[in-house]
Length: 518
Image 1: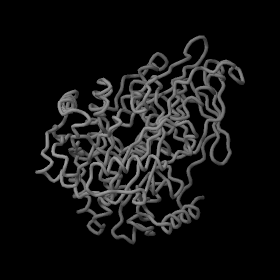
Image 2: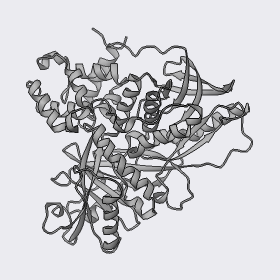
Image 3: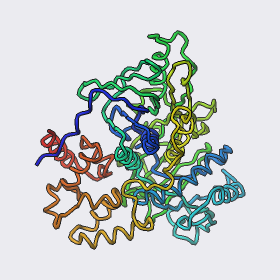
Image 4: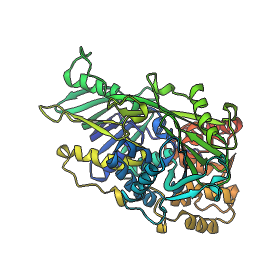
């Protein structure tokens, strides 16, 4: 039996809404819109979450440092969304405690205490997230990895997330509700006709697809202005604008890397630096510490972004100023960088540029179809961004209000939003599965894990073993249900096994995918 190929897309679609961009904002809007009764098509020129949305700090957080810039609305909204995601996606969103060592030469203690108080009280907080507290670092385990000169710290709650899986799950739910999700399909041309958008999409094989859409949503991330210019030229009928508008986009690069874990413990650290920035050290996949992020103004090709030697040294220096265990660039086991498409609010410092989202809405009058372009945003608030986008477009849709606040994402419908209890039940049902495989399957797929394992009664029933507990049955699922096409899709954006996989595992996957693609 061969794995079914991704079904060929029709040559033409007519929909209410065309969304360009398969990052978190695009799939979030697709899910919300189709759930309100709109017909939706989303296209992504690469894989889902192949750019900014898989290059985050892997956190669902309010943004403690944004309080310094008086962005109280953004922090309140993010803290509220933290609770929503803990309830609706408990398999991929988990509580995490953060320790902030206090350096009296940087922010004063009174400022940190006020910030912690606001963080605890700006939005409703569930018992799953204990409040903040002051620590004597000389008397608690959290202080052991740190330099002895650090005596005082503060501890508070936030959450971690598998960012690329969050994107995929939103896309899956959108598709289940009727949306068309076309990956590896680029929007190459736009024009307007009869008050509607006429788009030409081109898939990876070079086949053109036409889309007739009433609304165009530009969720292209770092490429948002490129698509916006294409749309403006389509509306005016010109081939080139004589006076391009001032750019509203500010690209800021954020880089991270991993090292062998710096400490034993399931808490994270948030570290202050003399330049006013903060950075994180986060437990990652049991064996590693994830370190980041940077804020560097970026003007090159977003698809070619990578960490620089200067960024590596910068992050190493901050870590070494706090931790007893020292790190150097050669300790790095993996690195990644992403480009944040922020709204240019004219802030002088890249770190101070708002992370809030801004919509640019045009058209909708005089026969011009509506266009909504998205600048900024953060992964924590993607669901509210989607709701606000649909509110902006309400004059053109006349559809009911939002519904996603209480709707679990695929796999998140476990009793009491308790992944540990569900994993224990899953392990009893499939007692022949290794514990590590149980934890990974439930942690990635939640209740969908039952559909992957199905009626199997032994490891042999799962098919070919690619290594690290990844079996053929799971790979088939990823191809058939999650748009996976390459070994990179599977190892780095679906299973997160890439950090542990060797070249042989990647090659086995590549060979299997080639042999089973019909």
